[in-house]
Length: 112
Image (tube, rainbow, N blue to C red):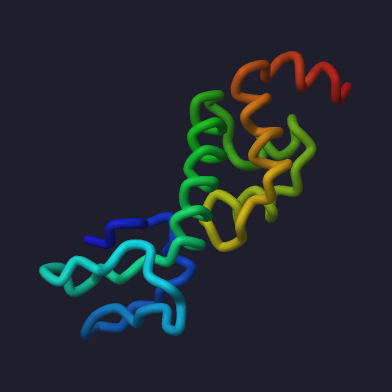
């Protein structure tokens, strides 16, 4: 079991186990009892947390990625990259999503 699925973009798997991200400071060591687990850097943990906020917000609204992207004017590819933690969502994007979580209709109305 891979502990942080959100950072899957950082890890490539081979049949004999995971290839770990190298030359990065450790934020969370790999679980030695799980051959598919790998260490997660502080940056990867931050990226995963941001991804989780965005994904949970979209899911709580019951919207697909395409619907969320259209309604709140976020490129669908960007949204996908943020949710999959392939790219770190910038601070302004996380703040925007937090506002959407609290006031989705107001944000959609403001965007016209």
